Image (cartoon, rainbow over all chains, first blue to last red; front, side, top):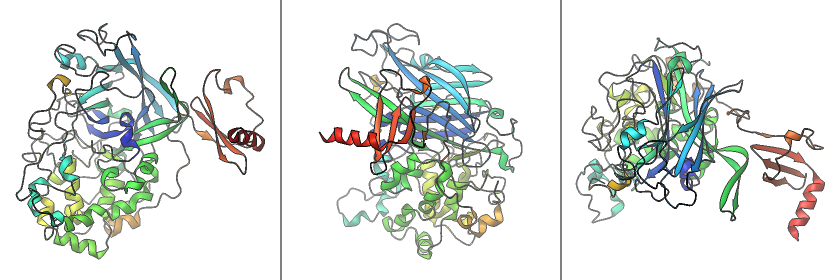
Amino acid sequence: MSSHREAPEISKDPVADSTDVYAFVSPDQPDTVTLISNYIPLEGPDGGPNFYAFGDDVLYAINVDNNGDGKPEIVFQFRFQTTYRDPDSFLYNVGPIESLTSSNWNRVQTYSVTRVDLPSGQATVLGTDLPCPPCNIGPLSTPNYASLAQAAVQQLGSGVTVFAGQRAEGFYVDLGAIFDLGDLRPFENLHNMFGLTNTGLSSPAPGVNATDMVNVHTIAIQLPISQVTASGTVPSDPTSPSSVIGVWASAYRQKVRIYEPTPGTVNGTGPWVQVSRLGNPLFNEVLVPITKKDYWNSQQPVDDAQFAQYVANPQLAQLLPVLYPGVFPNLQAFNQSGKARDDLVAILLTGIPNGVVKGFQNSGGSVQADMLRLNLAIPPASSPSNLGLIGGDPAGFPNGRRVFDDVATIELRAVAGATIPLVDPSYTPDKAAGEISMGLTSGPTDLSAMGTENYLSSFPYLGVPHSGFDVPASSSC
Amino acid sequence: MGRFDRRTFLKGGTAAVAAVGALSALPTVAPAVLGAVSGGAEEAGPTLAEELPAVGEPLVARITDAASGEIELYFGETGITTRDPELVGRLLRAAAR
C-alpha cells in the first residue's frame, strides 16, 4: 500500500488501484528477476460472500524500461476472467475447496499473460487459462490453504514463473498515525500538536502496523534476467547503466462504462485509458498535490519532468520542522535557502549515478521518470538491511524494492534530509533525520516488522494471506 | 543515453537533467492489444467490414467540439475521432427534444 487510495478517483476503484510494486534479483534464484505489482488496498480477509478478485474489465501491466529512455521496451499484460460453476447459487463455494479444479468452488478466476515488446508491438502470449487461487476463507472452505495457493504458481516455460491471487499485505506502515497530521508515534511527544491539549500524545509510543492482518491481490512474475535486458545477457558490471532496468505497474480501464440495469451488468467500450500507475513507493501518495494525483496516474513516466518541482521542493520537507519544532533545525535552514532537493530528484526520478555512493549506481539514463530502478548486476544481500542503501545494503531500496524494505522509514529519512549530503557534502543532516522511524521494526536486520509480516523465502515471496475466519484482527491492530 | 554523471549530478541534478518536453503522444502499450484514439480527417466511413463495430456491440458517440463538428466514437477497444457537422447537428437536435 505504498500508494494506496492515494488519489481521489482511484480511491473509488480498488481493483484498479495499484498499491505496491516490487522489483529485485531473486534471492533464492539470483539468475532471475522478480517483478510484483499489487492491487486492492486494505483488503479485509473476511470479505464474503463475494470476497475479492481482480477486475475482469481491467488491463493490468508491468512495464520494463531497459535502455534508460523512460519508456517501456517490455510490457507484461495480464487479463482476468471470472466464471461461475453454479450461477444459481449465492455462494462463493458450496463445499471445501481442496484443489484449484474443485467443483465446490463457484466463483473462479483465471488469467492470461502476454509479453509485448516495444516499439515493434510484437505480442507473445505466455499463458492462458492460468488459475488464480481462491481467497483464504477458513478451515472449512479452504483447508490447507498454503499448499492450495502454491499450486497456483505456474511455470510457463523458458524459465518464466507467474502467480496471480490473494496474498498477505507486505507493506508495513503506521497509516493511522502518519496521516494524523504527521504523527510519528516514536516521536509524538515532540509534535507541536497544534496547541491541542489532552491528545494523549505525551510520550513516545510504539508504531502500529496498519496493514497487519489485511490482504492484497498480487500479480507476480519471475523470469531470467537475460529476458529483460536490452542486450539479452546477464549484466555483470554494476557501474554500467545498461545493468539497470526501470520497472513500474499500470492499470487501464476502457474509456466508457455502460451500466445495464437489465441484466445488471457493467460493460466497457472504447480505448484503454490508464487510471493507475506506480513506480517508487509513496511518490504520488506524499509528493504530488491532491488535485493532480489522478492526472499523475494517467501520465507516463517519460513525462514526469512535469512533476519534478514536487520532488525538488516537497511539501513534506517543509512541514517536518513545523510539525516537530526544534527537531530539524538544519532541514529548516536548508528549506529557507530555497535550494532544490536534487538528492530526491536523483533517488526518485533519475537514479543515482556512478561516483555518488561508493560501489553503487542505479541510473540507466537522464530522463526524469518515476520508476523503480534496479541494478541487475548487484547480487542479493547475504545479510539484508531493511533500510536498503541508506543502511549500507545496496541490494535494497532504492535499488529496486524488496518485499521487506522499510520504504516508509527510508523515504521519511530521505525527505528529512538524510540524503542531502549526496549532492551537498557540506550539509549536515539533523540527528533526528537518521533516527526517524515508523517504529515498526526492532532494527535494520528485522525482516518481519516485529512479527507482523510473514514473507516467503521463495516465489511469490509475499506471505500466505490471512483467512477471513481469523479476522477480526488480533489486539495488535 | 544523455550525459548524466557524478560531476553534473553534484553541480545540480535538476539543472543538468534534460527536460522531457512535451507530453508523449506515443502509445506506451501494444497497439495490437490496446487501441489508441486515432485522429483522422473527415471520413466517409470504414471501407472494411471488420472495421465496423460488431452487431450488438456498444458504440458510443461523444461530441468533443460542436462548433467544428468533431465527434469521438468508441467501440470495442477503439476510439476514432472524426468530423461530421451534419451528424453532430442531428445528434444535438435529438438531444434537445
